[in-house]
Length: 126
Image (cartoon, rainbow, N blue to C red; front, side):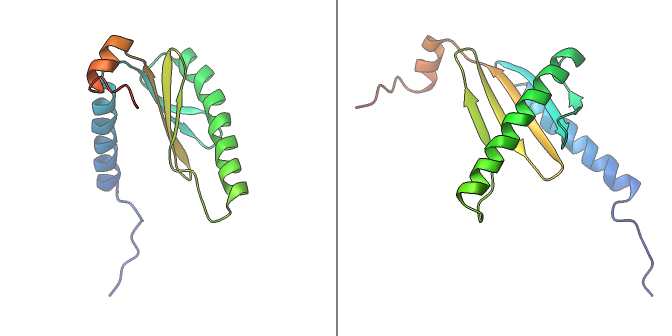
């Protein structure tokens, strides 16, 4: 006999939430991480490691940028999809992992150029 069961039990949801919290804590522990955001499809933050004001301001704009990038990728190749977007400015690096219903956004302060050279093995290119 097969019983009707919900897709996710309450215990399963709690386990997933604990795993998500562990992952977010691990991301936050990286050097220079300023904020970790999880946003819904509308760009509304549903989790933030920063202030609410910072999260609201950044989530909406970054979500719009990610949506435009996703649209561009699909326009160029209908069989392709955006899986990761990384943007680097003079001060920050923004990493976006879009999903069907949510997106993970990490904003990281850049390390100084001397630290960066050390971390990259002083690679100067040819």
